[in-house]
View (tube, rainbow, N blue to C red):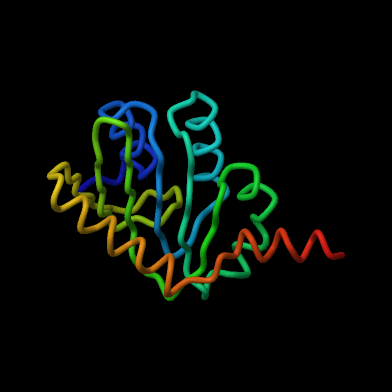
Length: 150
């Protein structure tokens, strides 16, 4: 538990272990401060692709941040989601991080567990894919199509 370490710090730590990776993140919401950190992590080349799953209830905040999200994330999904997971897959490793912190920057005590067991990571990955495929709205694609038609 710490009020000094942020979820972006944990992401950078995991990426140092895996090398450049494909990342999927889930959270109730996301903040501009976190997106800024994410932008610079991506700029270093440590993230090959990035997907996020956010909660429907945070849609207004997601819309306000959309210009920044669209420049940083390939795919954004909305679901009934309160989980906070980082799933990091490289060619040589997979890491799952289950945390209490949203994709935000705060000074509250938060906790995270880093999982490297292949079977456990595969289980988390399968559950996350099921949410994306059958329980979420592909917000990124819908927004892009709506803008294109206007």
